[in-house]
Image 1 (cartoon, one colour):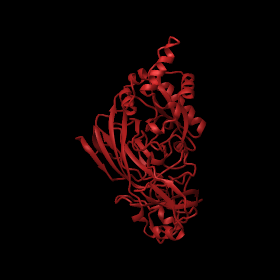
Image 2: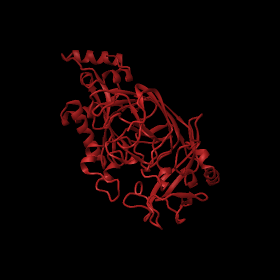
Image 3: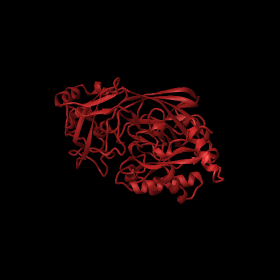
Image 4: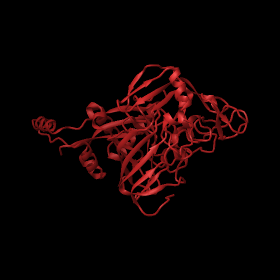
Amino acid sequence: MVQSLSSEPEVFNDRFTNGIIGPHTKMLGPVADGGTIVFITTPGCWGPMITPSLRGGHEVNVPVAVEGAEIGDALAIRVKSIRVRSKASSSGVDRPIEGAYVGDPYVAKRCPRCREPWPEYTVEGIGIEAVKCRKCGASTSPFDMVHGYTMVLDVESGIGITVDSSWAEKIAREAWSWSALPRNSKQVPILIARRSDLVGVAARIRPFLGQLGTVPAVDIPDSHNAGDFGYLLVDAPHPYRITREQYEHDLTDGHLDIDSVREGAVLIAPVKIRGGGVYAGDAHAMQGDGEVAGHTTDISAEVRVQVEVIKNLKLEGPLLLPPEEDLPPLAKPWRKDEWEIVKNVAKRYGIEPEPVAPVQVIGSGPNMNEAARRGFMRAAKLLGMSYEEVLNRVTITGAVEIGRLPGIVQISMQVPIRILERLDVADIVVKHYNLPY
């Protein structure tokens, strides 16, 4: 549902969903084709996870419709900038609390004492146990943090460092300020957890978006708009269950947790509802491939993206053009001097080398093997190649990288320019990587 009728060159967005996203979500905009969206995002995983009234596991921005985007098109989303707003973050390994949810602790929360679903809450003191049911007073977070940390973020120097218990407690008592929680956010900042199991661990700040994409064709929890988490919704024992067919066709894989979805990247996302509905959230200060702890340093951020409609490009999942330095070695674009050498070597054998460009196809599924298989299938269908040709091209001109455990992968390969021209994305890819052809 689009809120306004006339398109705008820029849309400012500091509004958030209650955790559910889909065709019934009211959208801002539309923003003009070629226009800009400025998102003020909330911290992603842990805050919404411990907030019992939020239903999706995250708290993402409400989507923005794009002028001219129709079902069966795609949207090129250029990440122009990501500015960290939070001064600190907290994260760690989770443990669900039995009795505080029905089937899925991210989605179907309930008070473990009075059984109120998605209970309203109060915060009394600090610690995760301070989140209490307003109706009966019981601690009501469906998650505990088994091993966690509090990290201060020195954005100017680009360094984060984990602090001791005295600083963790000081930050917990001023959690809303340190997290720079946006005014419209409804979450409890996870900084109240006051965790300090890691002290003096330094990390480089390298911000990216865990959530960026388009609205799925079915109303689902925002954190489950991906092939791994989305699988948990199939025939689930709560109101947000979906069918296997909806799982296969209606998701858009907006929740990727791929650390290359950062400043300088281009994400090409499928349009599965009219207007597309671009949304963002779940920004992180840094993350290694796989997000093996299950969570990382959630932050509030100011994000600027530019959007462009690509007509009649029907995608089953996103394509990613990461910054060149993030590409695996074999997928890096050929530079002019290299390509001259390629042509000279090929000439000796009477061969004309075909100009190519790097593309990443996102694969998703309930586990790594299934995510890779689905990614190869997506690539074969989109590019008009056999499954076996995709396997060969990935093996010698690309790689399979882990985005997130248990089931998000980046499948890189060098794709012939003629195929990208047929898909009407050649100009985007060639300009993005400044290719010599």
